[in-house]
Length: 139
Image (cartoon, rainbow, N blue to C red; front, side):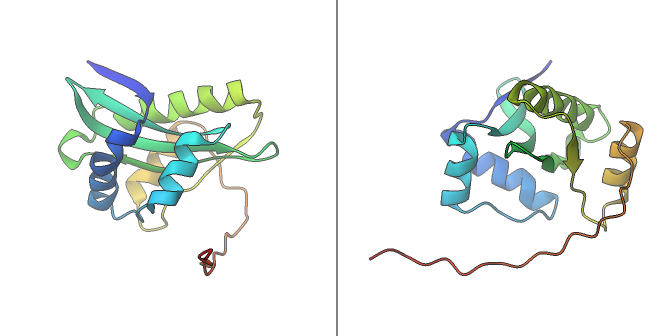
């Protein structure tokens, strides 16, 4: 039976392994900690018999809510786990105060597009541009 729960620090390696299998970028230790400790951000994990089989990130900044980095173990796909994770992420965001959510899907992941479309997400027309910022290390 699948249970969804907030990730803990000790889940780090398994979640990163699932994200890597889905060709998703990896969270640095600082990013991981920020997602776990943020007042309105969470990494939710799907667990089955003690093993993590999926994960998703849900964040809300007081204005916009986002769901991203949804991944399910390759051997557990097409069992409804992704749908469960999105549903729990939506509930988390509603409880945080969000009323509208953006979902990010890699443009080369047609299965991801199909999943979110089945769950009622529609294209809005925006194009998201990204830039990696240089991180300054305090001395």
